[in-house]
Amino acid sequence: MPKDTYKDMHKDMEKDMDIDNNNNIGSAIQYFRETYHISQSKLCKGICSVSTLSRIEAGERDIDGFILETFLERLGRIPYQYELILNDSDYEAYQSRMEINKLIEDKAIDEARRLVNEYDELVSDKGTPHRQFVMVCNARLNELEGGKPEATIDMLMEAISCTVPDFNTDEISEYFLSYSEFGIILEILQKLILFKMTDRAHKTLNQIIDYMFWHSQMEHNVNIYPKVAAIGSRFLLEQNELDRALELSNKGLEMNKGSRRMDYIGELNLIKAQATEGKFKAVGLWKSCDKGECINLYLKAYYSFKFFEEYTVTDMIKKHLQEEYQWEDID
Image 1 (tube, helix red, strand yellow):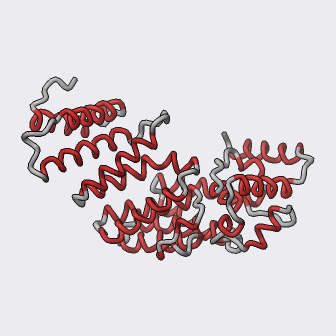
Image 2: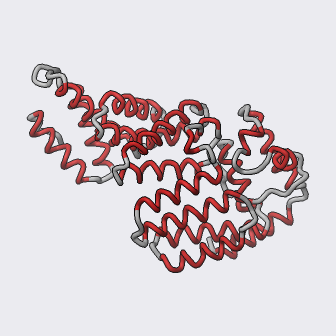
Image 3: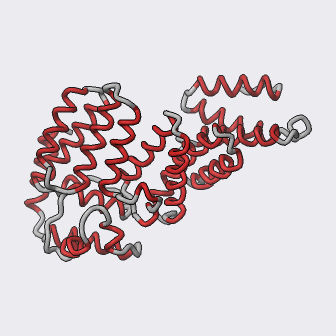
């Protein structure tokens, strides 16, 4: 839908609302916070002071749109069409973020850099989530420009530290992370793995797993667990930590039960198959063991990847089954 149409819809809705927006937004934050038994200090940690949050909840203070989005995400609420309740300046900032993300996705570096600088000036005094967004954009642009991987990771680390200042001290379980914050941490992990920074990758993975254990009741953590499990268990498998790789892949498959999502089912079954096979070989039982479990897992992975038309992986699995298991009739 065109930008002007969104803006007209937003203005029409504003006119039709004869309620006190600030008070209703503040009341909603308080309601969900108390429903999930989250203290004010934990919800606003890294974002604003407790006294500021109290005034927001009481309807005594305006709330910046991006901070509102962060609070909603930390509370496990999807801010669906939340742009419709934004004031004009917040809506402008929202549209700028969407445009910048699209430009970075399209690798339009110069235009993205220009808009990031403009955005930085526009929201310079509006709070840590805005500063975090700018830092993440700069990190991604640095990568697109061929900058050093270490610099990109350092920029992302600085970005997450805007709203999660304890990230480097293993205490993130004390936070309730938004989708954006969790996404930055996951991006850091993937880059640490990609660039073979093994020790730091282990530390970050352990932080993520610990966080998800303590916040397993939050629906969005349940939804993202299979992705975390796929990334983490693949890393552990490559480090030959077979027991941990099996444990994490099993957990990912368990958390995905009842879900209609299939994104990581193939990868998790493949990792589980490779780790199970690796354990048998490591203890010298490969020739005498029942290979049925491994075959079954490889077949589950094969058909999942085939569904998504990822034929490079299906060809690899098919070749492995033929060579290692003498399994010919896979189709």
